Length: 132
Image (tube, rainbow, N blue to C red; front, side):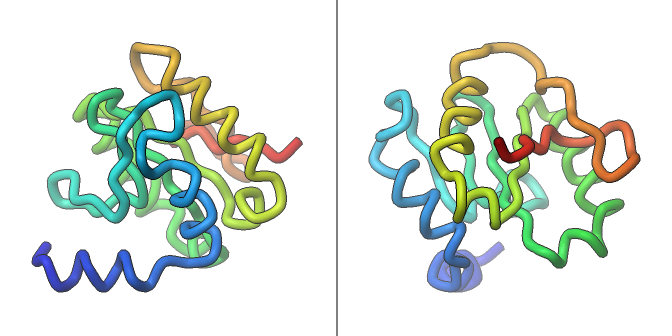
């Protein structure tokens, strides 16, 4: 990815991405450095903490139509050693404290990717933390 494209993605962040970035930036969460719209091999992830190998993805309604792509992408990232958490944009906007608690919990737990929650009747994939 070139620098101009990365800059464009950062400038065009959704409301949910802006809300969570405000809380992830400057090592505010467990002292961990997060990057936004960061390239991990052939994929650009929403947020990543490379020191803890944790990817945080925010999904909007367009992800209903690309579940196969998202699952393949998650498997690839997990094979590279990353843990992947997925949250719905709406959960970030309406319940950000619970989202951040889940991220802190994942940062504190070393090891492989957490066991995933099924996605609308499906088995494997990234953990999508349900709203409380």
